[in-house]
Image 1: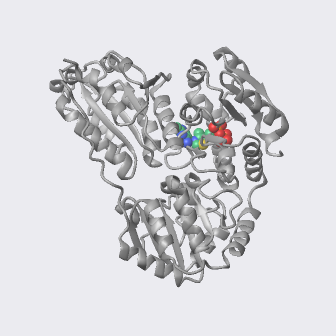
Image 2: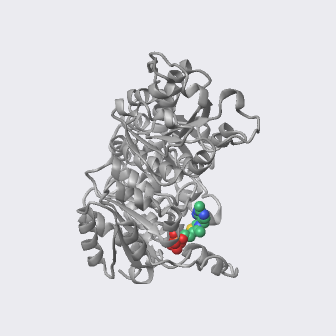
Image 3: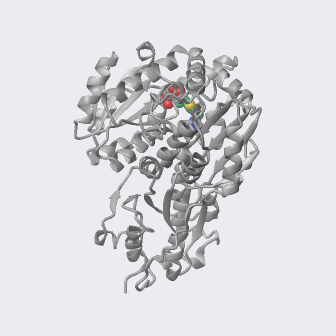
Length: 530
Ligand SMILES: Cc1ncc(C[n+]2csc(CCOP(=O)(O)OP(=O)(O)O)c2C)c(N)n1
């Protein structure tokens, strides 16, 4: 009879998972026994945080979760940061870890990899955490995970397997999928929303990452309504860059905040209306008129801005229903309002920020289908405002939500593994690069043709500027900058320093054709002028 550990990979395959990111340890080796009998691909990062970020990048471009096999204790605490980023951005991820024998849990006996309360630790960065107490329970727990990923707000799920349960006989376990349908909108609420929008003089739409899988339905709704659309960072690409109703991701700009206050009806779909999109500084934006919110999670309709009309629904189903309900011709002033807003929103942007958008726009024109996986670094802050991605799920970074440094390299690797036919670039600062730099070895091992666009300003630039603006002594921000060219070559990667935008385009073309990663370094001061 096979053990639970042996059966698990087959059950994962049956639930549609095809990739596992994991670092085996004595507590998890029994999960590997059954792997060769499946089609699951196992990827070994150099740190569990890398495993989580790779799974995150994988999910952002596909919309599907990958699994992570993680040892109890340090494996769990290491991946917790990556789970936190995924939790904050509603990204699916299946984290499977070991835990002590059932009768040892919570005793504090100082056993190998013991955590005081591992499930509680994971629970803080997961939709939920479950301890499997008997092999027969596993199919139902995986079914619950599938329901979270497919039918609710997707977030990391943690399943822990006690050591004695992993090796217990499992028999012929099979999944009994009962995945519920995603919530569809209430017809009366859609009719009311359509009334409110039809009667509006000055409507505005905000579209969030929750709608990334619903680009077609959202585009139909936009066409039916004819109002300007402001996407959040994670919603970039839902409308193409040349769409006449695309304002751009300019929520933090004064003119857009003024328009939010002046709009008589704001329609927000799949967005937290969160701080990292509306940008920190001056508190939350004021919504002057009525607010219609559509979200798959009911509670979300109450956070940050209470909805006048809240609709619990899958974004695509609601957008389709609302587009159908908005009979009659779309309003005609949308395009002119959009271009006025866009122009005004872009006008007072710092020239360096405009350069970041210009550079990425050139790259996405040169390399169709480009995916940019960024970190929390200055060029990303600039591009968040000034770059319009050509398609959904093609621009994401860790400046949103949790705001974690070190994301850009492993997340790009995960995205590239998921989309081997598309050009993927990692955009990362010299500070962030040093957080997960060992994942360069993983990219080499996998022969990923991955350019790492290393934006070097020799320090924690963002924090340095922030301190300077507040007359705070600049302590801890002028960090030692290593010779990244030599480091990259030492790992076995290619490395090049570029000094012009044309040279950058050439270097990327070479890097996309290579059989391993290339560190493409540029100097911040120089690149700001491109
Ligand atoms: C894990 C983590 N630690 C600390 C921070 C705080 N932080 C935000 S931006 C930043 C500087 C990042 O430096 P770099 O990647 O070189 O980008 P730059 O700001 O210089 O463009 C720091 C330290 C963070 N966001 N995440």
